[in-house]
Length: 356
Ligand SMILES: Cc1cc2nc3c(=O)[nH]c(=O)nc-3n(C[C@H](O)[C@H](O)[C@H](O)COP(=O)(O)OP(=O)(O)OC[C@H]3O[C@@H](n4cnc5c(N)ncnc54)[C@H](O)[C@@H]3O)c2cc1C
View 1 (cartoon, rainbow, N blue to C red):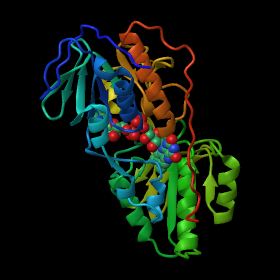
View 2: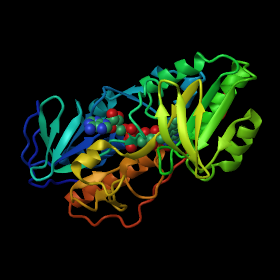
View 3: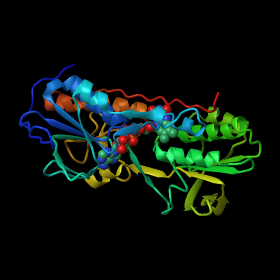
View 4: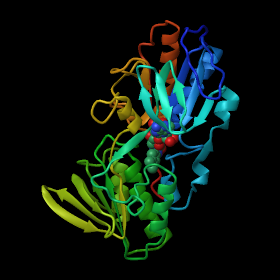
């Protein structure tokens, strides 16, 4: 499908020629959902749209497969991607800066680099953020749930463990990024310590805020039994002490503490901060129309990927599907065409549980 024609909307991006007739679609975030949306907007919209991605980092580090950095099967560089193809193959404009605020009245974004960018349609594809229980230091208690430096920090802590040490991780209440990911991590780390390092006396604890393993329970349950992982469901973390690596948590309405050599707290999650700054959240996530991913709170603003507030899982694969539905819907809207009434999205996660 190729859309033609343009509205008479106005858009200006710094360093680019002003074009007074071609709609300017700005995508905030160049992760799985944002990069896909930008690509399909240009593939399907061609020269009828100008598309700009504003992304903080020049290199994207994929969280997918990042648990395999912990056991040495992958490196962060294996999971790192740049944006050259988006510009050279699809004529997407790239700006590397952080969007600090959105002026919905003037349809303008303010960037950390001091520039402002006008948009006709805005896609927020900014991932997710954390809700920490207290202000502890994430360099001492890494989450490693955004891949990159955090993943390397956690790997270094695991590699410094000696036989008899303890690794404890916590799983936040659903919804969170990558439903099977935490269980996968527990398996990968337990296998690494016991079978690769040969540490028969290391202990792996998993404290899960959910009442049971949320996905693939048979597979992960069997692996936990095989590796001797101690799994505690329905546990809520109430405090993290980064200096003593001690957790305070509740289990069966009782407050308990647990100290560990390595503490990997994956905090509770919410939509990315730019979603809150834009005022398109309701509670922790952004409510959208699933036919278009347009905000139900502000027209012309679309939210895809982890920040969207449907019941769909928060995963890269489905973020890619959402991005295509959104790109199609934006182009239909710009061209006065009715939205497709039954878009389908799907999701599959690849879950390694050992190094073999
Ligand atoms: C260990 C692990 C394993 C996983 N495995 C799988 C798997 O097997 N399959 C699967 O489908 N999913 C998996 N996932 C989940 C997947 O990685 C995420 O769901 C996916 O990355 C979400 O895509 P996104 O585009 O919403 O956000 P992201 O990929 O986080 O991209 C958001 C981008 O927005 C940028 N950004 C944020 N705010 C701003 C701003 N204000 N201005 C400019 N840029 C901004 C960020 O820098 C980032 O690059 C896994 C996740 C983890 C942690």
